[in-house]
Image (cartoon, rainbow, N blue to C red; front, top):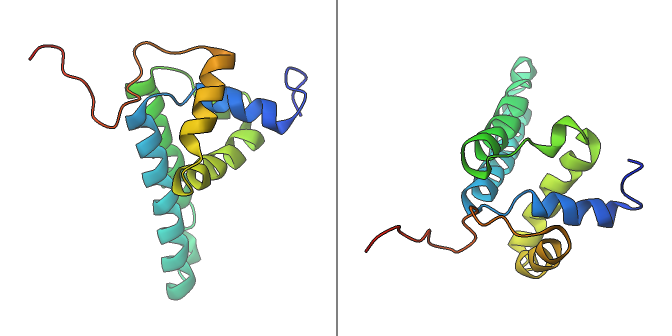
Amino acid sequence: MSSSFSSYAEFYLYYLSEHQDLTCRRLHYVGSFGVLAILLLLSVSGQWQWLWTVLLMGYGCAWVGHFKFERNKPATFKYPFYSFISDWVMLKDWLTGQLDKKMAIAIERHGHDETATTDPVAPTAHR
């Protein structure tokens, strides 16, 4: 556990505050579902030499989301274990409809990124 977080719950709110951009979160979901699909395919085919592709799928999608859309450094670099778990918890929260409530708490505690696209449809600059 990191000395800067007293619990996983505290870390998770920080993690969510680093995922305010909707496109970044969507890329995380694509990566997570892609990982599950690859694991299913590998378990059926038995071609475990391709197991490394789960890392490419999961981290590749997430890191594109962070570097291109969220414009921050992934928490994975500093908190690898907690970040890995949080990817799956965030997916679960999204699928169960709990993410908006938890995201609001995270933003209240850690601040709002004005450049993040949090709405379901990104606003256009000029209409």
